[in-house]
Length: 177
Image (cartoon, rainbow, N blue to C red; front, side, top):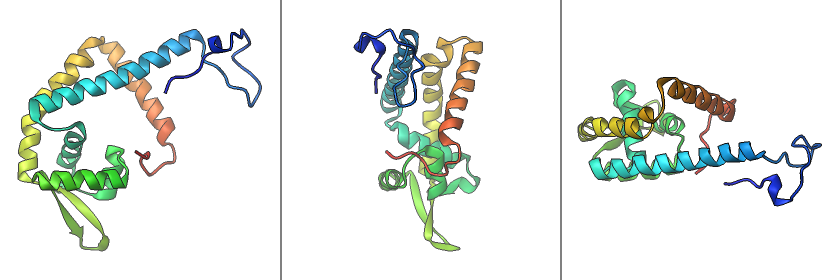
């Protein structure tokens, strides 16, 4: 996921090369890019570790439970859940199968569309979410929110929203796994 920089070629050319030529990252851009990659990876790993240790849930399980808990009647069509979690339909189907086996969710057929189905949060899934939420929010606070000033955290949200908007503009399907 890293980028090659101009230092690789030893060139000192402009970073605004003609069409067809890479616009190599400057040293400052390279530093920011690598910091972003490291932060995303390390934060994800830490939150996953904390979730497993404290609640014996994976991050994807927790995300599915949260999305279903926020939905009317605690159920969502599988397609809508895939879009909200940014999972491919295949990945979500496998995830729901595992969560069904654990009693956290169940599938229900859609009465008006026989091809469609709903993922539904069970009482056991709700109880697991309620038990897991306090430790999860503390982990997010400890490893992200409280590391930044309130202004920095607000700016991070604004920046991330701009990236998400750019990457999802005109898209109705989640990215592939």
